Each structure stands twice: as C-alpha cells, then as structure tokens.
Image (cartoon, rainbow, N blue to C red):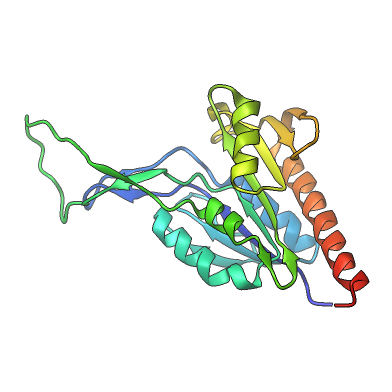
Length: 224
C-alpha cells in the first residue's frame, strides 16, 4: 500500500510593502516542523511548506519554501491532488498591501496610508475541495484567538470543514510549550495546558494516522 501523503504548512507569511518592509507575524514554525519530524519517523511522505523562519526543514521531508500567502496557495494547489492530510500550522497574514512599492520608500514627514486587500484563505479553499475519488481528505487547523476562544475555533472548524482544530493564543508564539485546546467537531473540548510542541505533534500524528487508516478501511470495505 502506498504511503499516505501529508502536507504541512508552517511559519509566517511576509507580505511586502516595499523592497525592505513587510507585514508579518511572530510565528516560528515550530509546531509544523515538529509534526514533520514525527510524521517522517512514522513513515509518512511529508511535504513541508515552510515560510521564512530561522529553523531549517528537517531531514526526510520534501521542502517547499514560501514567502507570501499567494506563494503558499500555489504550493497547495499544485500538491492537493496527491494529499491525504493537510496539517495547517502556518500563520498566514489575512491581508497584503494592494500595491507594493518598487524599491524603498524614503522616510518623510508625510502620512503613509496603506491599502490592504484580502489574501487567499489557503485552508478554506482546501476545505471546499475536501473530497476526491478516494473520499474526504483529513484537515487539521489552528485557531489563534484573543477572545471567545472556543466559540471562534468551533466556527472555524465548521466553516473550513476541519476534522480537528487546535485553539491557542498569541502567548504560544515563539515558545517551546504552551496552552492549547483540542477541538473535534461534535466532541467536548479537551484542554492541553503546558504541553510541549513536540508532544502536541505526536498527538496530531496519532490522530491523523487513525483518520487515514479508517478512510482506507472504508474504501476497502466498499470494494475499491
């Protein structure tokens, strides 16, 4: 049987304002990198779409570097026909400057107003294309919230057709461990306080492994 194919997105996006300035966030890519390491060890074919971070892609993965949200969307579109599971840990900027400046804008006393336009929603687009001839793919996402955490995370799970969403806060950015809430649609929330990102990755890989095994058993039962 072919190895299951896992696509992981990790790290921040950078949306250029001019040749030297950009919009971004503090995502380190650590969770996605840890998921990649665990999945490689477990025998998955791992594609890691990795944004601009200080950590290298781990050995054994197929590395797809990206900078902007549009770059990431192109990678996802290209790989999606082969993918069994998407674990979307990347912190994608929701907006980008409408017209990045060529070269560097010089400092002055003039006001500088930036017009922003929406970026593609990489995860929502994959949720809209969740099914293929093999059945529904498995989608895992993260919801970084500052208010109404569980409510917003559950809304995201429904809107983007996620099988699992990990709810967290900005306090988890750039640290080795943090507080998460594990949310599966229709199931009670499971708090995960003070969990290392490595241990979280192990639980995610166990979850997606079970989901993929169930999916493949279902196809075999139906005579496919």
